[in-house]
Structure formats: C-alpha cells, structure tokens
Length: 182
Image (cartoon, rainbow, N blue to C red; front, side, top):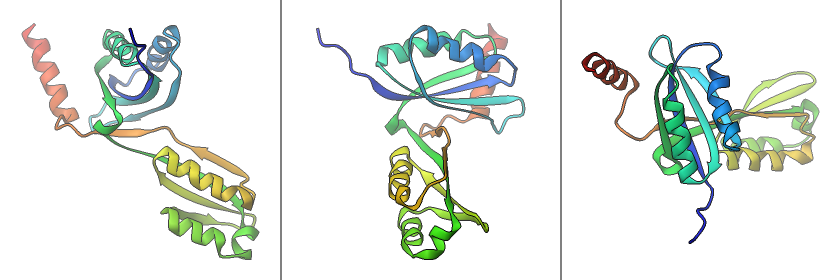
C-alpha cells in the first residue's frame, strides 16, 4: 500500500464573528499535528460573518477530516476544502530598503517594474516596496532585493476566492432555509 503524499490545501471557513473562535479552529490542527502554513481572517460582504482562509500541507485524508471536525463547531456556518487549481489567490508583501540604495542605481527600479511590484512610499531614510502575487513570486523578489540591504520584510497569508459559482450570500440563505426545515 502506497503512502499518500502531503499536498497543499486551502480551507475557506465561514463563521459568525465571535471571539475565541480562532483558538477553537486552530486547536483542531494542533491536535492532528498539522502545521498551518498561512492564515487570514477577515470580514465578508455579509455583516457579522467572517472568512478564515487557512493554508495547510498534509494528506487529502487528513484535510477532509479537519474540515469535517471544523464544521461541528456551532459558530461555523460552512467549511470548504480546495486544491490550488480550485481557487484564485494572492498574497501581499512589503519590503523596506534604504532610500540611498534606490537613488544610487536603476537596478531596484528595474526589479520593481519587471516583477510587477510598486513603490509604496519613499522617505528620507527608507523606501517601502509592495508586491502582490503568489508566494514564490514574492520570495523571488525578496531574493533579488537582498543585495540591496533589505531592512525588513513581511508577507501576508493567502487570501482566496473559490472558482465555484457558490456565493456567500446565497450559501447562507440556503443554510438558513435548511435549518428552518429541520
């Protein structure tokens, strides 16, 4: 019997906006010894509803079990499991470099343009560059900028929207209709 390989999965979880929920969701991963690669929590287009976007690397079987367990939490309205090709996703990164490096040559400006990044702000002491894209693009730009004395770097977690036709509002309406029937 062949051992199933770890793959990257994106979980999209719709919840009520309640305190303590982050801990209750993440503890499920901890108990199953699954490392969370990235996590983002934000409001949705529906007032009082939040979306957790969680990226994990594990077997499909483990990912399915985690989603089933998350769905049992009362404040969870829906939990969905996606592979990379089933979502549109992006991350954002900020790079802080000394302004003198930017003004001393065109290399940084050329890197910014060729990578699709942009200069967010230029100050007397430092310049902030912003890049939106996939993780490998963001990390590639970081490597290219390292010779120019990157002072700080920060990268967000993944934000993702499924490629399916499902919409948050219609999903919540369906769930409400089902709860009225049962």
